[in-house]
Length: 130
Image 1 (cartoon, rainbow, N blue to C red):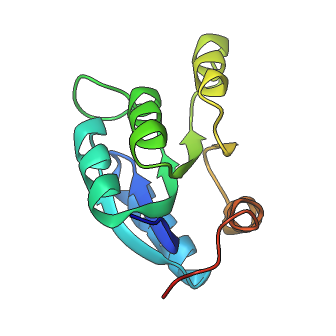
Image 2: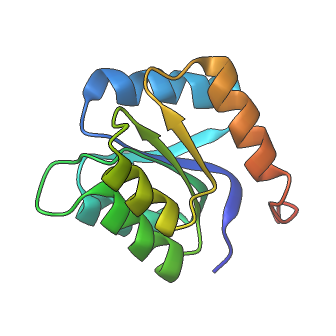
């Protein structure tokens, strides 16, 4: 299966943040293929929708966090992960960096910040087969 350059999966357990990110992504002309609040549902949706980009929070509902989810998604699906986190703890940031994210943004994220990072990540995307 091929990744879809125009698809974005949003993973965050806070509804208001998820909806804000959805608006930003749709304003960029991209499709939000789904949202998830847990690591397991994020992995499931990534397999189902093959998004090129995953916007990933670190703290999620359930046993596993966004860093663990991003590792699974990167290895199994190949999506590019952009972390959006409220955490600035050195240990957390080291864990994020060890998984080679496409980018790391800190909450609150502006539409401009997200847009420029997404555009940078999409520059490496394969041409759409749609």
